[in-house]
Amino acid sequence: MSQYSIVVIGTSWGGLAALTELLGGLPGDFGIPIAVVQHRSKESERLLPQLLQDATDLTVCEMDDKDPLVPGTVHLAPANYHALIDAGSVTLTIEEPVRFSRPSIDLLFISAGDTYRTEAIGVVLTGANEDGSRGLLHIVNRGGLALVQDPKTAEIPIMPAAAIKAVPSAEVLTLSGISKRLGQLAAVPGPTRRTVAR
Amino acid sequence: MAVQVTEAPSTPAEAERHSFKPDLERIEIELLLEGIFRHYGFDFRAYAYASVRRRLWKRIEEERLSSISALQERVLHDSVMMEKLLLDLSINVTAMFRDPNFYATFREHVVPLLRTYPFIRIWHAGCSTGEEVYSMAMLLREEGLYDRARIYATDINEVVLQRAKAGIFPLERMQEYTDNYIRAGGKRSFSEYYTAKYGGALFDQSLTKNVVFSQHNLVTDRSFSEFNVILCRNVLIYFDKTLQSKVHGLFYDSLAMFGVLVVGSKETLRFMAHEDAYQQIAPPEKIFRKIK
Image 1 (tube, each protein chain N blue to C red):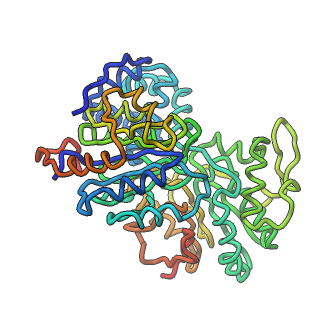
Image 2: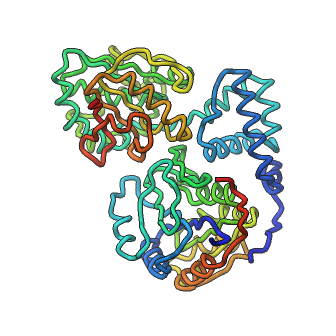
Image 3: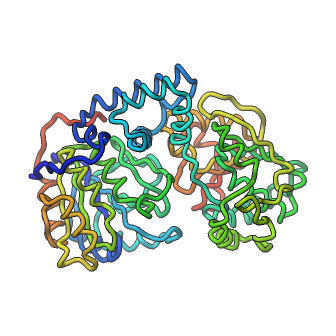
């Protein structure tokens, strides 16, 4: 079992292509649950999970409230809800948008950092706003790990650039570099005693 | 490995979170919720932990406090702070015809069932400020069912019920609601239902002629009648799974045979009490019929 228990990914503009490449580059036996916030319109339909599913051998599903986090499953936050990480499961809320976004990347990341601390990995990809940077800092402050798409390779560099500014220690990588790094991190065995009671 | 970032925290609350002791945080939250329950009677102890934690820290930051224990001190000695926290914890974000497709499906698949009843009793549990109650009233009126319907609209929070009764909603949301109304299959012009007044949109008061607004606590109160339809959308998401299941027991007991239960579009009945007693009508909408 890996040292890490959760990977949270946030992206906005350009996210579909970036997620397709990133998820497509993960090994089929990737053993950590993944939770994704991709900003999208309120009524955006069921197409996104299907498009991502076509790109990866991992299972992609849109979150329902209290869904258990499953290793190797990509849990996609639904449109018009915030998604929070609890110990072993997700919890949804419809509280007000944060920085104009619902789902909010910051809220996903902050909850992942609070719950999983040193076992959380936050990943910020392409996007045209600064959502995610506060959350990424929160993850690092809890002892977790930060990966950011190299802004030079991002469709829109604003979001990854803001994340790097907030977290200068973040590892800055290309999309295929992130896939490879996540694959390595999933393969590193961790201590048997977990910090989160489940 | 990641290096600790040592950027200076800008508020006391942020500073406290930086010196975060995870197990201590859980102890503090549990003590606060226990204190609120014993002193005020509001029971948030079985609420979903991640969202309670988020709401508590939001309040701490707004009050410029520094810890959950500091909030506890304020809440237990100041009932005004309790009222604020009550509003924080019972999230009151809603919209008219939220999820328009649900209303369109309700029209198509549930209204024909309701036509077979001489009298229709509806419980809207966790109605918040009432936007969705008014939405349902409009739908029933347009389908010619309103005069034989009674809607019991309940919420834990008296403040939001007063707002619901007043029927005045922000004018700036009328464009959004009009779009929702059209996509929900509305049969008239949405603007016929309100007039600009008192700095807001005052809704047609005849829409609440058959509505009873009343305080009810899903956590501690019992069933109060038998209904043909129970709506509880995006309310149980704030509860943990054990409490969710308990409330589903209450709904089951309160629903007539072949009655209809509606939950939010991202909620399920999986692992809930009486899960097997329901049949989903018209998926993916979360409309269920009690079949045993």
